[in-house]
Structure formats: structure tokens, C-alpha cells
Amino acid sequence: MKLTVLKGIANDLISHLDHQIWFGYFKDLSFPIDVNVLEEKDGLSKMCVSFFKERLPSSFDLKRIKKINIKVGKSKTFLKMAVYVTVDEKEFVAKGGSIMNS
Image (cartoon, rainbow, N blue to C red):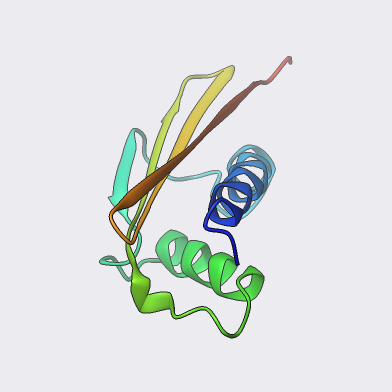
């Protein structure tokens, strides 16, 4: 497996979190968020880790991933996110965001 697949999974996670923060389960979180989801055990962290586990090949050793850091900033109409994944001394960054028009 090419490690750049992790960046694609991180991009998918941003899209998923975007929807969940605006409309779903995580809409009542306090912001800003800056957390390594591998170290925390809250609902957001558990969901992010399982998101990666479901999409990685079964042959990939999850222990190779040293950090999955989620950063989220939110205002009334704007959401800005970044996911930093560190694996085998390499860091992959995915960034995204959205604007909510009311």
C-alpha cells in the first residue's frame, strides 16, 4: 500500500466531519479543537480512529501511525479543518472547510 492513501483517507475524514459538525452528531462540540485522536478516548476520537481502521487494508499495521491530529475551527458560517497523519516518520496533511449559507 502506498502511504499517500492515508492522505486520501484524511480528506474523506474531513468531508465526513464537515457534515457531522454542521448537521449531525458533533454539532454541539466546543471549538477550536486540536487533538491527537490516538491519545483521547472521547466520541470524536473514537469515530476518527474507527474511520481510519475501516478504510485501511487489513494487512496494514495501525501501530505504524504515530499521530492523527485533528484541528477544527468554527464560526457561525465557516468551518476550517486539518488532519495531520504521521506514519513512519512522514507527515501527511489534508485541509478543508466549508461555508454554511443560512
